[in-house]
Amino acid sequence: MRSIIRYAAVVVAIGSLAIWLGCGRKSESPAAKASIDIKGSDTMVNLMSALAEAFMKAHPDKQVAVTGGGSGTGIAALINGTTDICASSRSMQEKEIDLAKQKNIQPKEVVIGMDGLAVMVNKSNPVDSLTLEQIKQLFQGTVTDWAAVGGNKGEVLIHSRESNSGTYVYFKEHVLNKGDFATNARLMTSTAALVQEISTNVNAVGYGGEAYGKQGNIKMLHVRKTADAPAVYPTEETVRGGAYPISRPLFLYTNGAATGLTSEFITFCNSAEGQKIVREVGYVPMKG
Image (cartoon, rainbow, N blue to C red; front, side, top):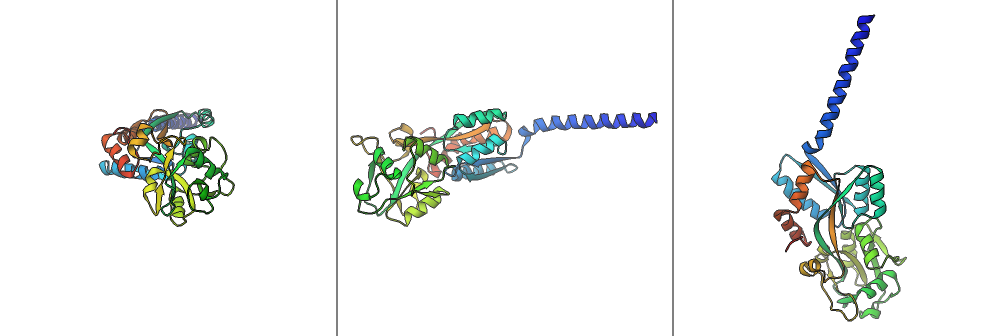
């Protein structure tokens, strides 16, 4: 009987040792990871996919998976510990940071580029420039006819991103001054879908990352801070220099300072090669 007890004790000891060793290996695994996940901004999904493709080409034994869903989706994934990197076209809100810390997540922010948020209309629309106040009036529904802002007579058809989009949040805060969109605004699941709608309707208006403004049958408007200010078109120079009134950073968030493969990828994003890709995709690199 005693021998059986001794045998059981040895088994327990060995089992405990295996668990301890296993835990030790697990703590080291992030640095040795062969794959990372990136979730978040639809605005940034093409950019992150291009960066991931170039990174994997240089590191054939590594994998980088990119999915969109919106900045809010990416931030939620970071808070819940289900992504290595959150790509976000807006900064995290204080309530999101507080929630993250409650779950022992310490958000670490890195900027990899800039984006000019373009106001887009159909190419057949004669309007070429608007003030920030006029843009606000259009999207809040206080101006409902294009004739009121220098266009042809016709109902203004508003297109917006959904509320989980970082683009939506940024536009709401910085253009609508935290006011509400018009109740008849159509909420689009992606900027690509929004661009498609504007391309086919002369009275449509929407907003999105400047990189999308070069697609389809649309044009980006010049924007004036005030009626007396110069009309500024979203370009690399005007966005980086701050002359274009609707500009924003593009963020990557990690849980604490990035390590291992995650750190390598973020370093690549801000390298000369990575910043070249930022420009090629249509965004503004951190350096000229």
